[in-house]
Structures are given as structure tokens and as C-alpha cells.
Amino acid sequence: LSANGEMLAYGGFDESGRLVGLGSDPEDFFPSDYGLDVEKVFQPAWSYDGRKLAWKVSGDSEKHGWTSGVAVFDLEAKSGILFHTYTAVGGGSVPHYLSWSPSGDWLAFVTFNERAEDGRLPNLWIARPDGQGEIRLGFAFEAVWSPDGSQIAYSLYDESQEAYYVWLHDTVTGEQE
Image (spheres, rainbow, N blue to C red):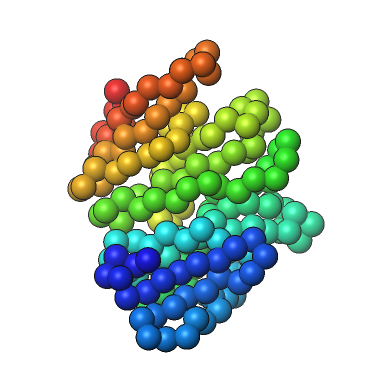
């Protein structure tokens, strides 16, 4: 549901993404209308201003060279940006979880099965909505943004991978505690 409550986005692995306005019929969401060639879109996340929509996306490994990624669509400019594409190892998976910072300057997402050395552990990433400035925060999940978007709190596994702790990352200074 968009921040103003006027639009709903949804999609699934076996169906097209859809947008629905209040009192309107659902309309298919085609990434190609925004200049992107992706197979499927699912688990959307609206920016707080409602101008952008991030989706988890899938691609055909034969055609694209990757199977999972993140796409941000600018609904007003009718443009799209694809980033953080990869092919899952050890089984299929896609970025799990998308969350905009309230300021719209950052997008958080979690991947699974991305790097063989990580196994199935979740990796938390943050990136600018244009895909720039990407930072891997670690084996983490459950990210929550501060109201001004300057910090993100998350649960991070320790080195033993037997416990996890709450960490705080400052997006301005890059410091973590």
C-alpha cells in the first residue's frame, strides 16, 4: 500500500505485478514500460513519497546471466533501474525484504544463497535507490529505519552464527555499534 493509501501494488512468482488505484480495476505492471527487461516482479515496496516503487525481480540465467535482483521504478519519469543482480547458489532464492528509508535516500534488502561462503545465511545490504553506494552490513535481517533515515537498526549474527545482536548503522558516518 502506498504511503498515501491511494495505490496498492502486488505480484507473485507466477503472475504479473499489478497496480490498483482506489476505485479502479487492477492494471498489469510491465517492467518493459520502464525500460527494464526482467522476468517477474514481486514483493513491492513503495517509497514514502509514492513516486518510486522497488520490486524484487527475477531474470532468466540463460538470457540475462543472473536470476535475482532489485529494481526501482520511477513511476512519474517512467524509468527503471536494475541493480544487485546475482545467481543464487545452493538453491533458488531472491532478495527477501525491501525497505525504503523514510527520506527515500536508501533502500535496504536481504539476500539468501548469494555467496557460496555464506551458505544460506541472510545478507543485509543498503544501497541508494539508483544502486550506487551499496554496503553489505553482514549476516543480518530485521532492519528498521530511524524516522529521519540516518540510521538503520538490524539483527546481526555473531561470528559463531549461534547468536545474534542488535546493531545500529549510521548512514551518514558509516559507523556501526
